[in-house]
Length: 69
Image (cartoon, rainbow, N blue to C red; front, side, top):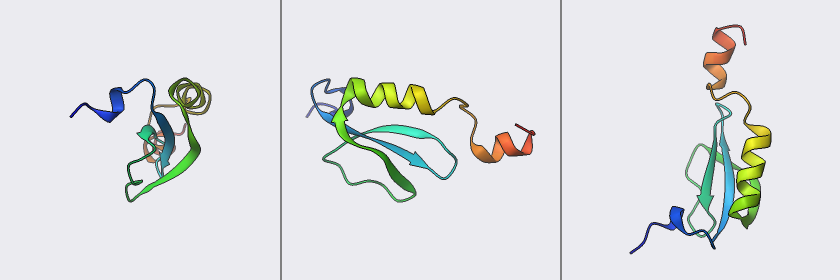
C-alpha cells in the first residue's frame, strides 16, 4: 500500500490544532482528536498555499505566548 500523504492527485484537508499548528491531511482519513478542519477537501496545491498563507509562526501558540511573541 502506498502512503496516502504522497498521492499528489488526492484531495486533502488542512487541519489546525489548538497550538495553531497546521497539517495536510488526506480527506478520506478521519480527522484525529485535537485537530479541526481549517480548509475543506481540495487539491494539494491549494492546501499548501493555504498553509503558507496562514501559518506564519512555526512555534506552538503556547511557546510564542511565553516568549512574548
